[in-house]
Amino acid sequence: MHTRFEQIVRGIASSMNCEVEITIKQVTAPVINNEAVTERVLNIAQALLPQNEIESNPYLTMGAEDMGYMQEKADGCYCRRGLIEVVFAGQVAPAQRKLKKK
Image 1 (cartoon, rainbow, N blue to C red):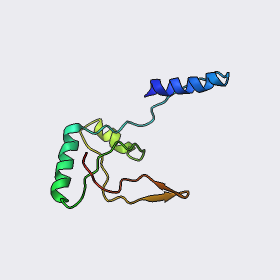
Image 2: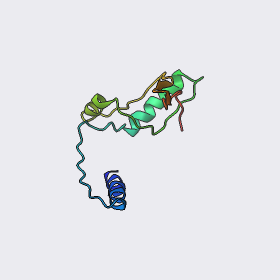
Image 3: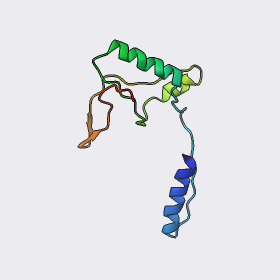
Image 4: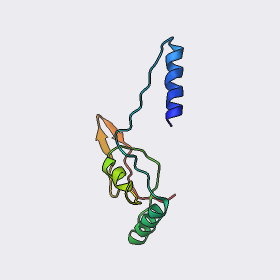
């Protein structure tokens, strides 16, 4: 991802006859769900909530920084449940509305 980011930034700078210096600092541990744990969580959710759709999507967001550090020590799965749409600055945020399995 950093390579593509750098390509885009350098391309835009070049098109404007500018130079750019890029420094990327990782300030929090990334949240990387363990596939086996995630599958188990999805199966349990389906068993407990058979009337609901299970939604699994790659929506990326900040807000789970502590989970990243915990997952450095043990396999895990960060998931959300029961979220509704959130309105921020007049825009509806793309919150996960349902649990839905691919």
